[in-house]
Length: 159
Image (cartoon, rainbow, N blue to C red):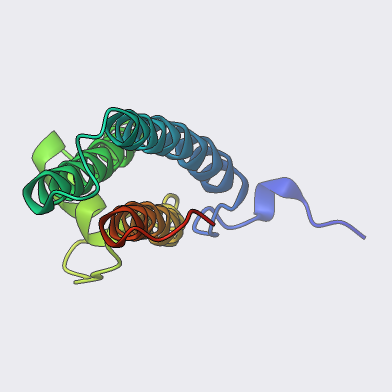
């Protein structure tokens, strides 16, 4: 026997809407990050091909710094995207508050000083999962850049 839909309490945690919104937002952050990673790889390959980096320390340092800053810029755009979603869901009265809350979630800092409504609360852990994944991708890319430049600097063969 199925319960009468009119008797279902309105304070139940909604799963479908936050999951759909969270999945769509995560997909967008993956696409943003893919563009960032592609830009980093393209720049590294070009600089290696032209001989700008590899044996020269300062050129390598500049490239690593640029790659890291580009990854950080991507993360900030992704935090901003989540903030726009929070704002569109009606969770915050201004973008600054939504951005702060998004940054706390995305970085998994988890202060807990701002809590979203029961209806959209699931977006918090979804954003935290997204942030962990995107930081992992950034870390892997920066490590690969450092490894490749180290190989070039030491004259080691490509693998």
